Length: 201
Image 1: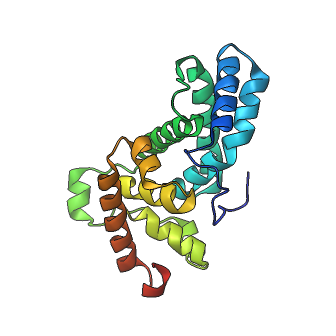
Image 2: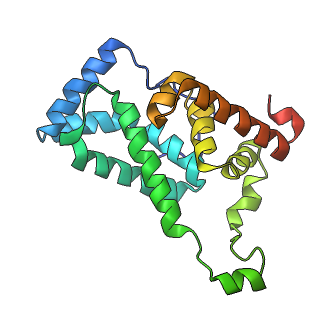
């Protein structure tokens, strides 16, 4: 895994060319039949993209590595159900998105109603990495993205980190193109309120 999240996408997106789709479909068929080498090739092709997506959502290298491993473990178990008509990376993103949501449910601090009334803000756990994140522009951006809604985070990460277009994001998230553009617009507006004016264009 990488030491920190990269700033730019590698160009691998949900819309791959026909040759890559054919290769992925062939590898997926072989992996579904138990070919470990075929699954290993799929892992090598897409582990960086999945890790990058997860890292921007969880903002912690060790957790991003754990969640990424979990994503590929779940993908391996689910290979017999994979349908090659959808791009393999889109399928992995869907598994990754669900894994991040599940992780958020497990680690979210729980407090009683009485404690919440007695101690406003007690549910906001301070992360010691937050101070370090703010030292660099990338860290500040990750922190700002974390303040968006989960759906806004998905759209911003898939659009600006992974480089996917609106249509690909819509297919991945099960939303219409116009809805994705609206979510992106609101997310950028929220980021403008969080980050210095020159940081969000």
